[in-house]
Length: 423
Image (cartoon, rainbow, N blue to C red; front, side, top):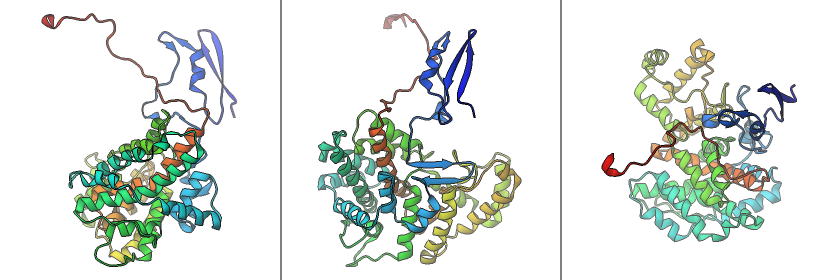
């Protein structure tokens, strides 16, 4: 295995150290070009490592996803979302006493200031719930000005917990505001997921009791969405945090990135595709259209995974459990037929187009009666655990600097200003 990289430049040999399969971009500066020191050009950061992280490991070729070294399959089978959030933040799974204290700490901070609730209330009722969530989260640092002292370990800890705890409350308020319903406040009698479902769906009943199968399915979905390495929204969180920002301000950047249809809107695109196909009988025609470039197969393939997304296998099982409660989503048969063909057809296999996590998640959220615009909110709530973990890691990393990428300038140079009368 190469320990260094030899580059010949102008007759001189330059040796660059290779560490963890990378070279340091700053080391390229010792190589001169006609345009100045050598740099790399990497739109979308397809092959650029921006940080060193011990949180999430992905092997896209092998279809492996691990949180802090634990396979996602084991965590989804045995853990709860709050237990996984603790793991992401602290590096180890909690023992019984630690978990009890952690759950108590999170539950203690679930309420939000009435002024933060008013930010949602004063939004247009038909505005997107992600816009409402973004505005409300952005306001939180005003209620907790101590959060700006990111060098204080106590401030870091309490504000990460606050954000993790309040995100479901704000998300539920945004949802109910869209429906014109009264807000349901957190209940100390309910656990994290049960409480979230209660704030979303409680009507006139004195005590809301969600079906245990739905609670577990949402818990698993939250675990699967908790973190996913340096994706677009996580990179946005780290970039904003690099300027010295608190977790609330940094998380707003994550929400904004996730709001983009190319990042958080994939499961909604899957449902739209299934609706357009209409029935199982139309699947062969649709597949032919995909091969001819006339249609696009949504929910298959991934920027990172070149194998079956490990989260997709788990979420497929969760979908089956949800449908036991809600009844089978009529689009399921179409989805299953698409999956069967894609996993068997050489056209898709050779292109490594395997189902990803978004393929079934939209079916689950629709079965739970969420409108499509809430799908991204249901992504943002669990991803908060990853965002605060990545925020903390970046803040504590002595190598991190304020994000400031280079550019390749392609515009005009040396132009002379003309008075407006001469233009």
